[in-house]
Length: 74
Image (cartoon, rainbow, N blue to C red; front, side, top):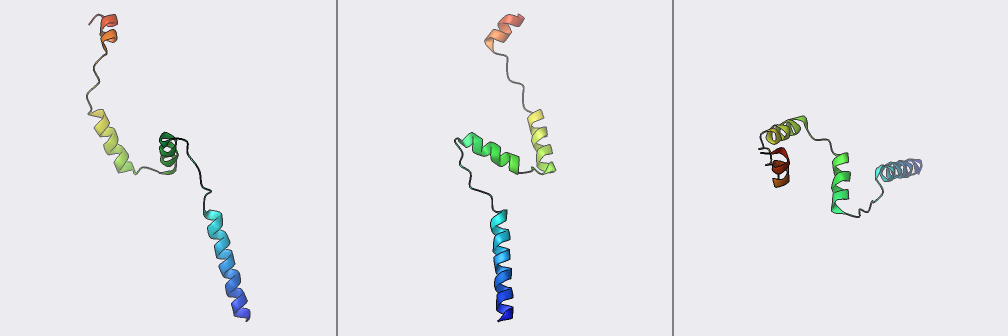
């Protein structure tokens, strides 16, 4: 009987730890808010971040809009 009570106590402690670790459900008003929250929770691996930065550096610069060309005299 003593071992049964110890086992129940351990199970209750384990359950309390698990429920304490669970985060409360959060409701998002928009998809963008959900993505921002998710991005804040996840750390991007360094190799992926470096490849992304290289890829973005190789992208061509966007063309100036008509009004920017007009103002600058190009």
